[in-house]
Image (cartoon, rainbow, N blue to C red; front, top):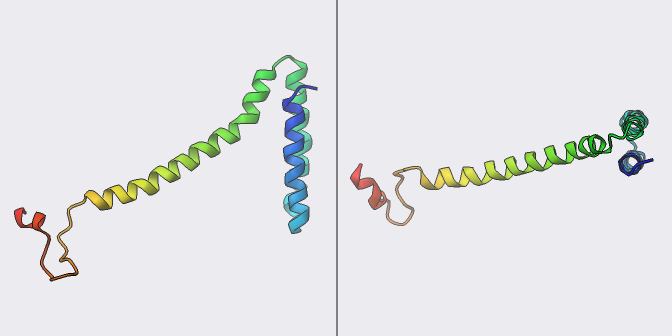
Length: 105
């Protein structure tokens, strides 16, 4: 058995045990089926000397999660940038006059 076919059941078993701990039995059944099918698929890929494909399939969810997290972080930082550089002429809280940059409008 190749390494991806050993890593995947360990990770899925931890998720199944977490579902048992929190009492989410419906999700636990789905993960047990995913554990069996995924392990069989990875074992089949390794049996046909396609270990690189097995590693690719095993790393794909991790890659998408990292990309999604990066997009969320970028989006949250972009909100601050757009609010900083947009031209707004609200009076400041000290004396009620607009900032000097609004006089050129």
